[in-house]
Length: 365
Figure 1 (tube, rainbow, N blue to C red):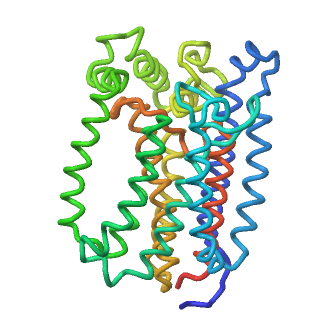
Figure 2 (spheres, helix red, strand yellow):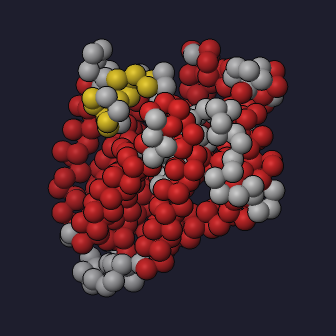
Figure 3 (spheres, one colour):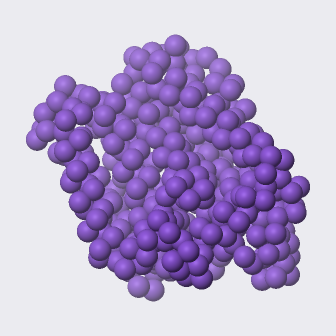
């Protein structure tokens, strides 16, 4: 086990703070019109985003400086607490419904989303479990099946809300950890086929998901219904051109694009800052993901390596899905853009996870 402690990865810190700064600016720009219309205060959303950003940065620096080996003993309690919260949120009268999903706990506009915390808790638990069972991973029954059972249970609870987007991010990041731990590609390939069949069943079970698929293939079939968000997103990105219309000059945020400060904030960014602004943000994400994978590869502790891989997986999968939806390459799933979109639970949780990743970078070669 590598006990050497150095300074955390400076490039990772710079990328994180750069993305966070862009996010705060874009939350204000994207939400000011709606905030003034709904609350009489154009700063309503950005003030809350700044509060959670400050809490998240504090959490990031705390988790960056504690001994990450302590996280191993908290992995199981954290997972059990998150399972309890996922059950609690399903209870009518306790869980709050937002955006058609019963996925929130809280009072009024302040709340937490247990499925967001489950993403990190699952990665933390799998890193501990698989680091102790790596020699069993080539075996399907003894190595692969136990973590898949735990993962499937968590995914099932998230789907009861339902929240397919968050569940998909958790599954993607968890499978990356399982692969890095030594699972056979043949086993994972077979599971991918089963998963595709299950995904088809989920779509068939809920008509609104089928509408999203057909809208993704041809949004003009239902331009005022299922295809509305995709069309308005493209209407925002197209006029942005190379340099954009200018910061604060978006037209689509005037009640054309629903919730522009959350899932479709990249559309507003591309409209106002153009291809150059969008490319800069994506470059910062790539820098963050590259430095995170470098940490996962060079750290000698198996637990640390798997934990770093999972945290990077959360970011990579979430960015891929969000950008894919915004540019019309994927069906609408309700996934936010990490560190950029408005949202307290997601922002605080992701900054906490980045603190752990920065901590791991201090122990990498």
